[in-house]
Length: 86
Image 1 (spheres, rainbow, N blue to C red):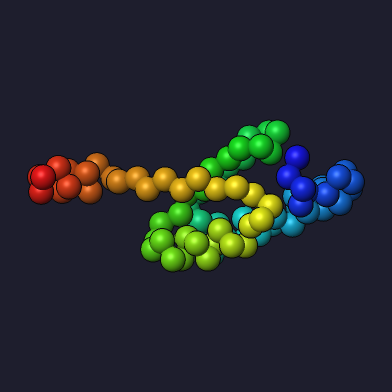
Image 2 (image 1 turned 90 degrees about the horizontal axis):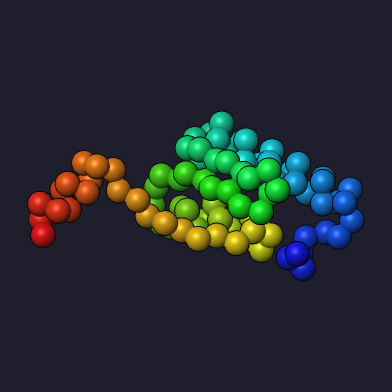
C-alpha cells in the first residue's frame, strides 16, 4: 500500500470520498471527459482533452496519492492526417 494511504479504514474511506467528489466536480466542469475505477480501487482511467500542461496541473491534484501513466491517443481523423503526411 502507498505510504501516503491512511492505514485506518475510516480515514481511508473519507479520503476516497473526497477524491471521488473532486472527480465528479471535474466531470461536471468538463475538465475530465470520462473517468472510471475498478471496484478494488487499484486501477482506473480518466479521459482528458487538452494541453499537456493542463493535464499535468490536473494530475497534481491527486499526487502523491495516485500513480499515473499518460497515454496520448489520436482519433481516426487525426491518425489519417498523420499517415498522409508520412
